[in-house]
Image (spheres, rainbow, N blue to C red):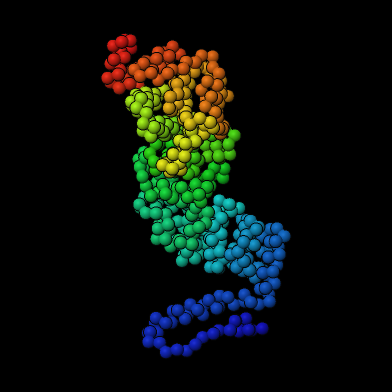
Length: 471
């Protein structure tokens, strides 16, 4: 059989062209080169070599033992463009065999191997050996030098940092480097994750950015940061760490945290808690819980205010500013360690109707009365405040398994949250105008927490309180 018999039929048509020959000839020469390059790919010998490689790989034979001649090397170079030929690791020994039979590697094998490397990246066996082989192969095929930026040590970090330094997106950066083909692979995903995190670190606390909109996409925050930890955990770590605990969590940053991990006040056994919150460590979890407690207070105060207006309850409306100042003062001065919010069914419907679900903290529903409750953990004291005409309850030494102190989801009754709580010492204070805050401060002092009038009262009320009681 002659070489002409190995060449596939060459189809062409003669047509009149007004283009000069120097423009037409290069394109036609390239077509002829492509046909020549594929010569032999349809021969029986090649087909046999391809079948031998395919069956050997399917049977998990080592590549080095399969790559015994030029045809098999060529068959592998073509076949490795698909998943079936990637089932067996490409060992250094196999790469040495390829070098032996093809000192100058074929373009098709190089392109298929580069695609495999960029597509699988951290999941690829012998990643470093393949990377070094490609670098050496490029020295023999300089037309692929633009690949080198994807083959440096720690290429994802290098690509991400270069894009960040240039002030452009990672996608734009790889396009400029003629590396569009790596988009969608694991190398690109790893670089994209690093780019996201480095860009996130440059934001000022609570700064809004289009970057935040990318981070709330499930395919982004669920992607791997490490084999054990998803990217979303590191995103939350950066956001929580960068914002001082004394500052309020902004809407855009809270929306990112809500989309990824949700409210951190969950039982330790919750799958969501274990996946997203536990890796952050206790310090950052407590810091985030403090911000969500502030949201509890905002919603609770809004419920009280709206109820006072809707019911035309003049006493409640008159006392609202003092109750608001008292509770906010406890937060502002660092007394609050945590909280839980319990809304009546009516209040729950109201907040769901008026507050976007992404902005709502976790809350439970009071199953009987149309009253809402907020619980504040003040360390040595546990405070329970209610809407409507509820009393202000102060407890000392509550057991850890008390309904208020666990994060298990429930629908407690109003009684269970107030009179039903058993504690060694407790005080129930009626909201009598002009005296209830004084009684609350005295009870706190009795229980060992010193809260000054200036911290929880208006200037006018604080002066009156100090004038009468001396503190």
